[in-house]
Image (cartoon, rainbow, N blue to C red; front, side, top):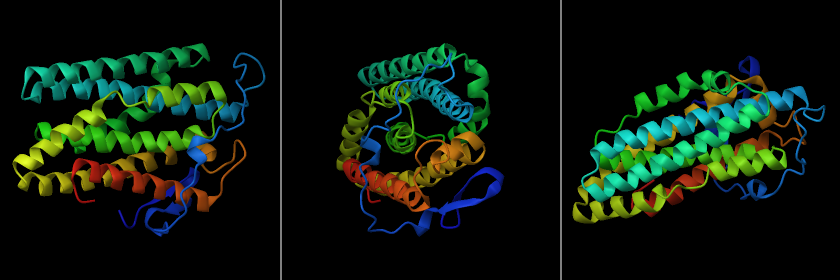
Length: 264
């Protein structure tokens, strides 16, 4: 991961992950509204490049939610108890509901949902194939760590959005309950057998690298989304701010690792 960086249209370097200062000041940008009012998507208020970026973002999120539904349904088969199986099934249902909201939003702005999701299917499928959990605990860590990194990234992008779209994105990124569930189960497993902690810590570090690479790939392959991220569509933030964004994502990951009882 040391040699990886975020690249935009044409393969230009935007920022190298490891160049981010460890002591970068925390920003509250992700919690502040963009100032872009709700848009009339059928009218002239949606600038074409901005619309393309929004369609890309919603398409990526929609496929991510659909994949999360499928993965949680599969993980439920690994559940050690019936109560655990039922809990994962409930979370899978919540993910599918999120997918439906994103699909409906795409249709409402006259974007074909399947076409909007298609460009992101391979990257997400590759990620899930490369990080297939070998057991129940690895599945829990993946859902908590991997999905949370992706959610942090999309929340950062949401700062750039109009008010209606931003509200939808933040809603579908809400924790479905998997966070507390995963923390409880993983900590209990480590308490019962401390050796489990080392294996899961290595697994979580691998997930971190793969998830950041996925975020890089999603942005680099879509010009409109890349331009939005570096500030070419709305009031922009500069390259230093992009570095700070990845610093915030990394710090949040470290906190989640601590919550799980794992060394970052």
